[in-house]
Image 1 (cartoon, one colour):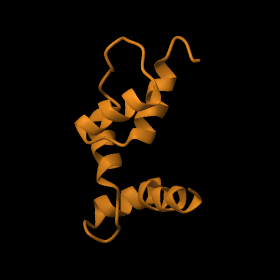
Image 2 (tube, rainbow, N blue to C red):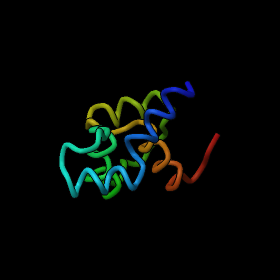
Image 3 (tube, one colour):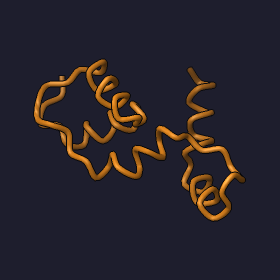
Amino acid sequence: REAVDAACRSMTASWVVEQARQNPGSMETCRYFDDFQEAGEATLMPSGVYDLEELKKWGQARGWCPYYLTRQALNHANILV
């Protein structure tokens, strides 16, 4: 798990994303995170009850990073169980 977390951070760090924007192809970024950044943060989820698997499926259907989608959903949740 730690290796996956480290790999994720190495592709989503703000300085990596900025360098990739300035010089395309110079840095490896995560397309799921990039797609989420472009559309996901501005999109509201439909009201409802979601568990982690449903959040994962909802994000995957849009090509978005399930980790960052879940973090975004937590910011807007009314109840956490």
